[in-house]
View (cartoon, rainbow, N blue to C red):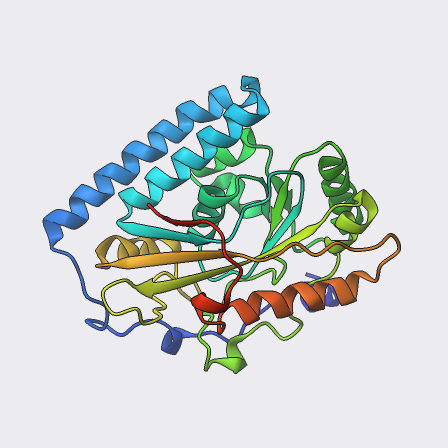
Length: 291
């Protein structure tokens, strides 16, 4: 890889110490884990069937189908969904922090959108098929020269009235409040914010966080960071008891024509991280959904 490519690739400071130690997270019994695994496999199979239908469904039915599939897949994993705030009803660029592969399901369960994802997702079993059917914009992070074409495609999608979702940190990190050294050094990358400016589309920041529902304490059980591999991460989620994902939808940002995408990215990033520390009672009133 070229020096330019290495500089462009996002990186976090997370490592094994960011993940829960053995026995730290309350676990369900082995039979319960097996039942969850079978349920997840069933939902992935249903997703393969859904992938065939999505291209021919009307937009509203497509969004409802994706939302339902994502919610039931979270339930199959044993993850409880809590959503706060009002999801956008019109086209918008949705931007969120990124800790886990579960973030995609959580976001789709609240606000179905066309995702921007790394190219490797296309090769994941069944998930890649569903991603392709849903029109996911796949990005080769080793080829920064392709970025303008990606921005142009997202702009076109937004102008066509399609909501688009992106994780502008470009990589996962544990998200722990006291882990400042883990946070990707350059924060939200501004490139795709240009698409919202060019399309005249609002930017909607979302905060995704994971907690132990029994205690209310944050947990990194769902984090997918460092040298962790996907199989080990999936096994950790299947074993976790009372895992909860919270999605907080913040008020939309409306950039003016010709706005500075870097300032827009910094504003969205500030809103996302403010949502992590603002008590729920002081947030804007909206949807509170448990699934």
